Length: 320
Image (cartoon, rainbow, N blue to C red; front, side):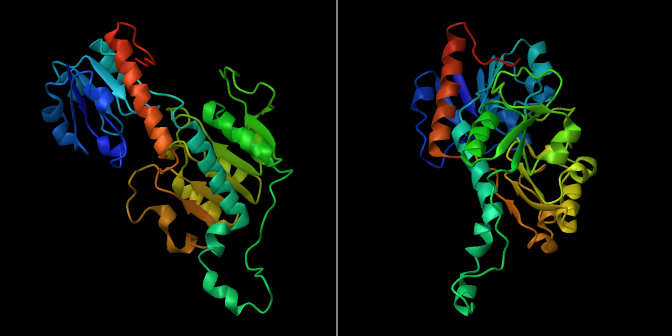
């Protein structure tokens, strides 16, 4: 069986052992694969592993031997699921592997934004110039007693809710139609109007769909509580970034912490890279919330399990 990974550099820094995949077939991998290289590199593959490489309808139809697509992530928007279904090719993902890492990264963004650690740590040369023992340059905010609003209460949202509660925050959840309410049914679910108006922190933990793209835009941002904070460690297109830049520029939001952007990597002229936003309490990290070694090991284990189960005739974590 020929197994091809199209973008192994998204999984390893040289610290991941691919032996479990090598034991299951003829395993080959490429650090990165451009759109024009996919068909050539995967032509003989029966199993394809991808994280960010797009498998659209044209590519899927051009791979005669393809029998299984393993997405090395939870989100499967890189695969044309209709095209895979039409060819009866199972598509399997891995969920839950990054929960502790992403939850702690979300907390790190929030704590930095309210304590100004990211700014004070880069101004150490100013301390010797202070006339008193400390510096009162940046306002520090206490989280205890404040409201944390969570959009998407899956595993990661639930894990972050627990951290927020440990910080003595009051947690509430954006109510949405069709929510299974499996995780934390004890938490209050409130209407969008109440949610945005009353949350001191809004943290996004939902998948990207056609319905929620740009759910955070000029309208919802203006509805947010003045001085509130936005966190997004989910998917970049959930946020209209031009509108977010304006909300930060105007001071309506007191800060934002992002680990994702709508285009990755972003262009140098991205609206959130504007020089005048440098002092607007904005933290952006390059999609690293999930990248702990522990997380990547769990991800590989999930991919291997999916492959083994498919070989055994019982595909697991199938999304199409």
